[in-house]
Length: 142
Image 1: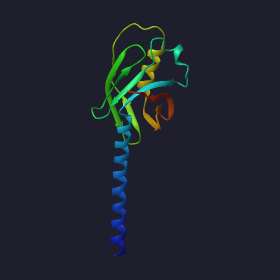
Image 2: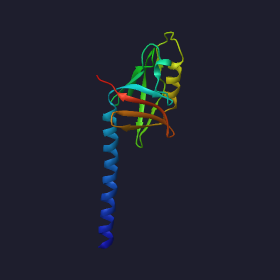
Image 3: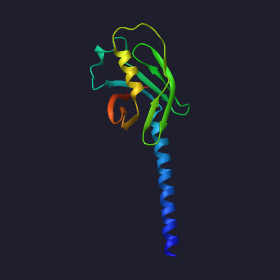
Image 4: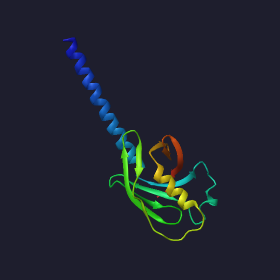
């Protein structure tokens, strides 16, 4: 009898933790559905030197598993993968090909290609590579 109760408790605990994980991921995905404006790139917050035209932004559509935005000069879009453990990746991003002054566009795209996970803290989205911060973005007004 004690073994049966212990087994049932263990199963209940495992089931609830799986549900919590799914709810947590769903909640995070819901929070990501917004426009996010770049605030820092590789620790640099004085972005005017990198981006003379406008600041980059990302727009997430987690239901469609897509990301779009602008890299400071060119529009970008592509598939989005989000998994448990706050794992995120952008693969096969396509961008328009207008000529742009400066090096910010390349630095932004290179950083996006290295992203492995993310952290959400209030209205701040931090994109990371193996735990190291690549960029911070803040939720933009619609």
